[in-house]
Image (cartoon, rainbow, N blue to C red; front, side, top):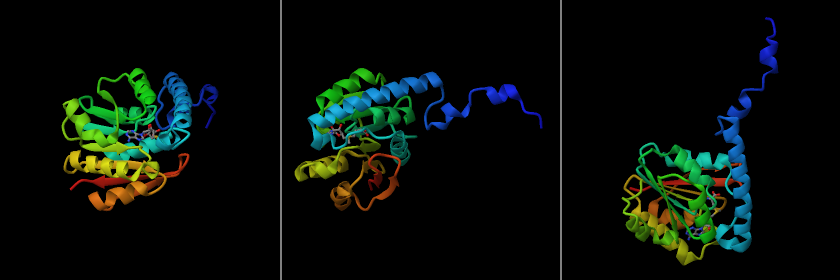
Length: 221
Ligand SMILES: C[S@@+](CC[C@H](N)C(=O)[O-])C[C@H]1O[C@@H](n2cnc3c(N)ncnc32)[C@H](O)[C@@H]1O
């Protein structure tokens, strides 16, 4: 079969498509810039608050996609994200959510919350500075229904025990019946707090992240 030189010398079409998200080169470049800026802001956040940020780099796109898959956003009307950080995970959730759905992002770090408001311009996103333990009050303040899913990047392994228990109690109290709680963690502390309240989780490892993470999933019955 003759070689089509024109085709052979063309830029490989699969380069952009092989990345989990990117479809256009321009969009890809913008996202890479944004990821670099996020990584620097995240590192600053870690240096200032190492115990509550608990990681030097934000989640990888692979982990974000694993979290989106575990959450099943196809029919969700209201989603709560706990600990959105610099917003990579927030953008991934928004990309998978319905046009009418709402995402309430609750972030303890004021710099991260301000950055999120400024940089993620999506009418479905509501950014709340404060603690995940006060989820019920935050939902009420924004007039939101019981969430169909709660997604957490909060580092349960470094939280004071009473804060960890309050966050789990708030999730159990506010999540809709049949709603999902998805938490990504390297260590299993989140399960030792949550399983006595919500039962045994399913989980999968995502190795393509620094550090590798378990993506835990509970369904409220
Ligand atoms: C490991 S980072 C995850 C950031 C981001 N979701 C990601 O995947 O890259 C943990 C985040 O949880 C936030 N956080 C810690 N304790 C919190 C709390 N009690 N309520 C809300 N956010 C909290 C931290 O400020 C930080 O942004």
